[in-house]
Image 1 (cartoon, rainbow, N blue to C red):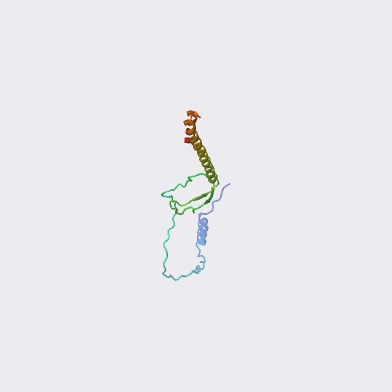
Image 2 (spheres, rainbow, N blue to C red):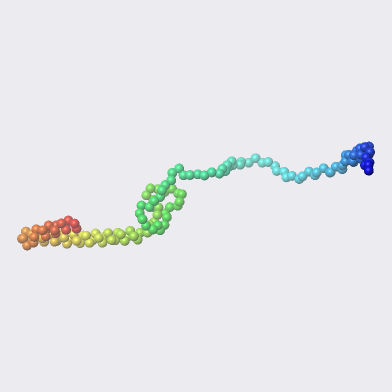
Length: 150
């Protein structure tokens, strides 16, 4: 069995027909419409030049605010970030413990003053009694020492 060859001229003619059909003139698309745009009239005016840049800051000086006394803070007397003056009160502290300590110290002072009056009278009595040899010199010295402690 023999395969027949297709004639060379027939293949060439078919290929040329395909190429000629592909090279035909296409219909051109209509030109695009011009888009609508907004128009603004330029007016001269002053515009502030503002530049915003990201960054971090840190204080040049940092003040440590510390209490000089212990106690419960009742109220803050300043606004954070504002300037304060030397001697300005910064906090209101509960005065109850300090009032109690003051009253206790006053009571101790009154007791010591009463004790001093008693010791002065005792020394004055012993002085007369020591001169009359009615009391020992040791008792008189003890009374004088106790008077000094009062």
